[in-house]
Length: 174
Image 1 (cartoon, rainbow, N blue to C red):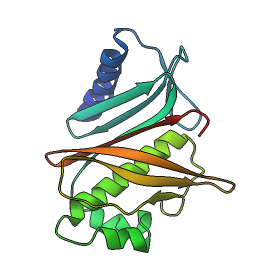
Image 2 (image 1 turned 30 degrees about the vertical axis):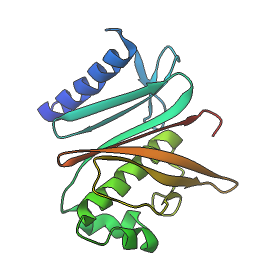
Image 3 (image 1 turned 90 degrees about the horizontal axis):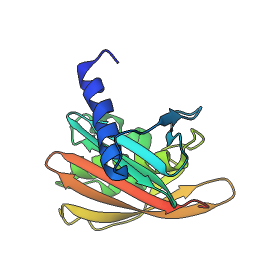
Image 4 (image 1 turned 180 degrees about the vertical axis):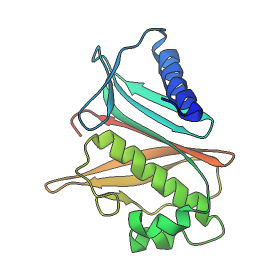
């Protein structure tokens, strides 16, 4: 990795995972779709990074996903590509940038849990209605729609100044 910021993010993700697993040596591999996994197969893992922040999540009993997104104005230019008209309506108001970013991060978390590029981020990953009370922590009701099934997955979030952290864990058979 030649970009210094990317190098620090890469290292930060691995340091976070090392801390979670309480071991300095971790073998990480990537599946054909780019999803990281432990070479030992002991747990499901997910990484996220943005700016100077990095995060990791792991579970030996659940599929996991995590995302970090900076709240920025440019999200308004692409929102119609990842949000349904109903979801766009939910983002209107004074905190629209935070809510759009939260929805993007939640959908990225679901995408990472799925682990394959067979989902449409706009139509297959859905945000349920919620009351955003400007609280730094909360949960979103979300769904992954598949051709033969639909899974409801609560996605937790935490607001860190100008960054949103989202994460979720679901049973392996979901």
